Image 1: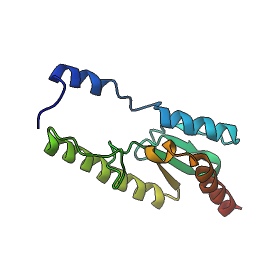
Image 2: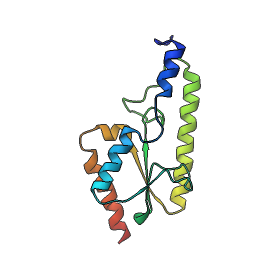
Image 3: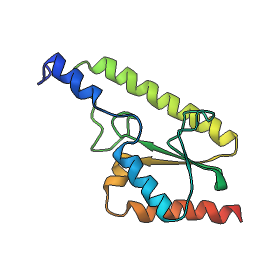
Image 4: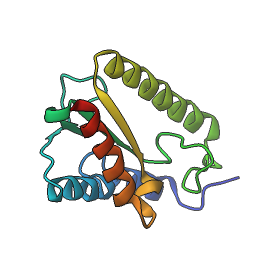
Length: 141
């Protein structure tokens, strides 16, 4: 199957995709701030440079795009029909790196919360995130 866009158009489209300050990240950050949580962004000293780190509860929140991180059984993740082998290798490497970073962070006694892009697009994501964070808070006391 051939791409519906020219190589130049596809290249331009892919360059427009951000890795920091994405819409899902900003939604979660605004929500956390409104609930009184204070956090740090993209801590370089933590494996995987997580999107959000809440020092008070030693919690890492990683917000993952369903396509880029290969979210199984998700409507937002479909392997591309062109250059499939290359994309599957790239996404597979992302998945392996995510698993390794999560293991290291958990071993270092960080609480790790993974939020998928599709969870945020649903209607009750704020309630489920608040429940996850509240359960971590109650564990601490």
